[in-house]
Image (cartoon, rainbow, N blue to C red; front, side, top):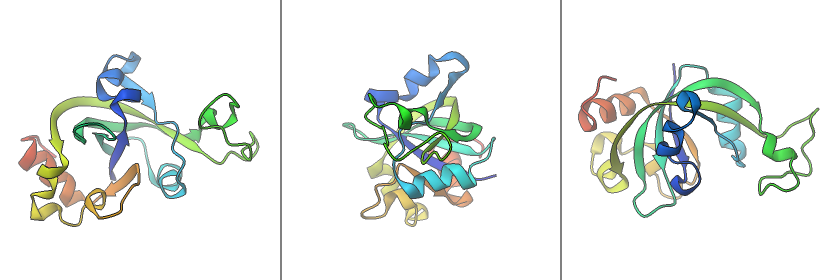
Amino acid sequence: MRYWLMKSEPSVVGIDHVLAMPGQAVAWWGVRNYQARNFMRDQMQVGDKVFFYHSNCPEPGIAGLAVVARRAYPDETQFDPESHYFDAKATRENPRWVNVDVRVTGKTRLIGLAELRGHPELAHMRTLQRGNRLSITPLDPAEWRFICEQLLGLPA
């Protein structure tokens, strides 16, 4: 099992949106970074645990827990010329972009960046590194455990 932090803009798809969806699951569409795509395509497995992170908002941070509910499959937005995520080089035979489905398992209190940065146990967390802009980052199991147990008071 792997652990991930996945960023979403709450004004587009926030945790409350997903909690209101059938099955409380959403396709994680619109990723247009090759490294993040490769994480989804090559490493994510059903059952992997996810921190649902709100980004590009007044108070970014971890907003909930989720699991990968479906392995990678082609992101349909790449084929839609009306979509902001359209990719003219993508074809059905050779798609360039994928999504995974993510199912929210619970909303948490917001754990903001300042709080995350305040713990030396998270000093190497990829999301907190200077210049990191990836929307999907892997977590070390120790980072997952620390956030769940110490910051959220939940079993890892």
